[in-house]
Amino acid sequence: MAFDPASLKYDANGLIPCIAQDHATGEVLMMAWMNAAAVAQTLSTGRVTYWSRSRAAFWIKGETSGHVQHLVEFRVDCDRDCLLVRVHQHGPACHTNRRSCFYTLVQDGAEVITMEPMTKADR
Image (tube, rainbow, N blue to C red; front, side, top):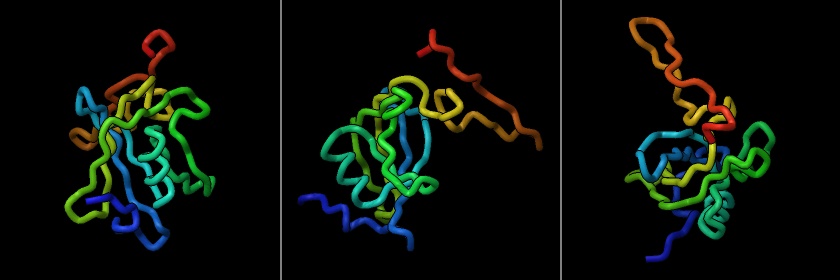
């Protein structure tokens, strides 16, 4: 059966959440939004493309930073309202230069930073 991006359940703004996961380690890297065109572009180019709500424009991950996400697998959840992209991540995924956006742990009522920003030597 052929995949149709229109078969996904987008929100009222035409967006669907997309979780990026490292294909080798399983580490959750980030969450961002896609629209139908970003889904189609990701699948056709192999470069993960999101929709930037703040800029109201396509955001090809790594286009300016060099921290590219190459698509390995594209998955749709059972309700068709959330996506999972398994990627090969080059450099940090987070705009704070951390490997993952999920670096803040809430533990015993306090926030604990679990990873430091990557240096150029780490990348």
